[in-house]
Amino acid sequence: MADDETNLVRSKGEEDIPAQYGSTTTQQPSIEEFDEKELNEIYEEIGFGPAQYLYWTLVGLVSYSDFAELTLMAVLLPMLRCEWGLSSAFETAIVLSMFASYAIFAMLFGRVADAYGRKSVLQWSILSLLLAAVGGALSPNKWVFFVTRLVTGACVGINLSCIACYSTEFAESKYRAYGILNFAISSSLGIAAVSGEAYLLISLIGWRWLIIIVSLPAVPALILLLVLPESPRYLCVSGQQERAMQAVRFMAKLNGKTLKENVRMICYEREDLGSYPILLNQKNKKSTIGLSFMYFNNIFVDYGFLVLIPLLLSSNYCGTATAPVHKCQPLTKDNLLELTVAGSAAVFGAIAAFIFAQVSGRLKPLRVSSAILVVAVASLFICINHIVIFVTVTTIKFFDTFANVIIWIMMPESFPTNIRSTAIGFINGWGKIGGVFGTGSVYLLFYISPHLLFGLFFL
Image 1 (tube, helix red, strand yellow):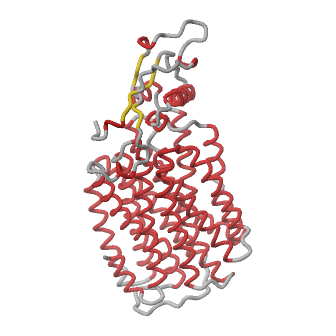
Image 2: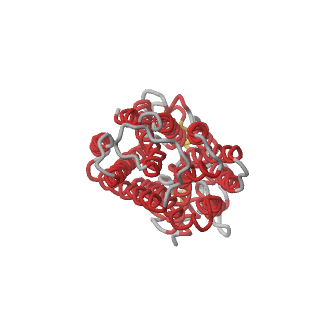
Image 3: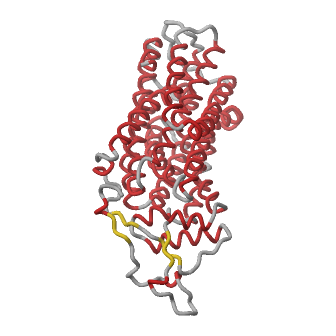
């Protein structure tokens, strides 16, 4: 039992028994006749089936859409540089403000989702994301576009804090890693798909329609959120036992199973939902600080390379110490194809991370991937030709995603339900602060001294 067990309140069932727990034609069972079960036992009884697949579809749609929105900037900025005459300073402002907005709202709304529920927070955030996408597509100038990217960053930060919890809370604990795998693969597909969609469509429909197309998966996600109930695990710890039972009965029906009418869920109500003191207490602070530090470093590299790769490709940079010139030079179709292939490496990195996490634990593969990342970044200092740069950045994308997925697997299993969204939001927020520094470093240093920039990544 956690050292804050004084905050746990066992739901004994002294309140009125809701009608759906008993027969409507016969006398309801007495409290003593209820078959009390832990949530994991109920999940085992209702089995794994269509209910979990629907929730995982929701997770996949949201994570795909979110990471596609973040990656979209790498494709759009070289084009907007020509259309609106964006300076390197304004490009930097757009990217930094978007990731800073992400970090702030991830930290704030992770706690809100623990206190008031994941579902309602996600609904409003996804709706806002769709409105921001429409606003971005209709932007008459760079300032309106700037504001829409701020809103997009905030919504993505809110979404990912909630959706990472959703990926693990609707099945038995043994399926937790598979939920994270679904989250990771969907996210990686979002990264690769944006460049692929741009490769196929942008010359035909332009960048405004591309923004709309990238945001479309959020529409069925919003519909699923309206239909599916809140997380039973969250409802249980928040003292909403009746709603938790309604949720699992709904899931059982979808799976073609029927729970006996006298089944009653054992819940331990927490009075410290979304508590930062609990997150940073003696028991949790090692996981909180350690994962935040690792994620900060990984996202520093990940998002730094997200904006660096288009700059390397469009400027044909190859290992010279001479600084490239900031100029209007949109990505070619060949560049977009290369970005698509490099982004696809993230999918394979996610799958590899899942396999190694099951076989070798967590920290060993994380150390190996970090060592390979150091070697890959070091190779950028010496370039034979353009192909070497492409292979190098693809390798970096693979192993950086590998490391990120290992951390994602560790996040939900390191914290209890009552602070899980708070913890993920906190760690995610620190990661995106790393993204702010990583992308900022790229824009500040690439046009001054690429070698100095690579040295910063190397450290």
